[in-house]
Amino acid sequence: MDYAQYILEKSAELLAIDSPTGYTDEAAKWVEKEFQDLGFKTTRTVKGGVMIDLGGKDEQNAVLLEAHADTLGGMVAEIKSSGRLRILPLGGMTTKGHGMFTGSLLRNKELIFPIMP
Image (cartoon, rainbow, N blue to C red):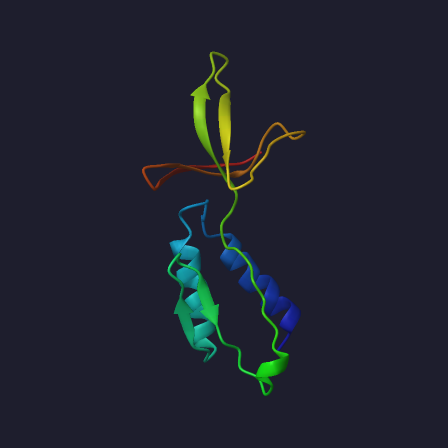
């Protein structure tokens, strides 16, 4: 098995799931299923995170890997007279120095359309 290719493919699958701050359940379900399919036991935290025990021989010399599955998001605060949007950041998103961002526009948890540069 080509592990580098496997990692790229699985990363692309996960990154293709819309998961703005507060709407990460689909990404968490994907992570859960992928690790269960590999034979690992998963549990969900109270806040919706996924915990996976990868096993090992020495509980006193364990490693913990922690990551987040949400894409940093923003909320439309205003549609300016020029048609441009004023965005309020959610979860640390910033457009400073860039003037634009990519992502998806959601309304009431429903995807309206993807935003591309």
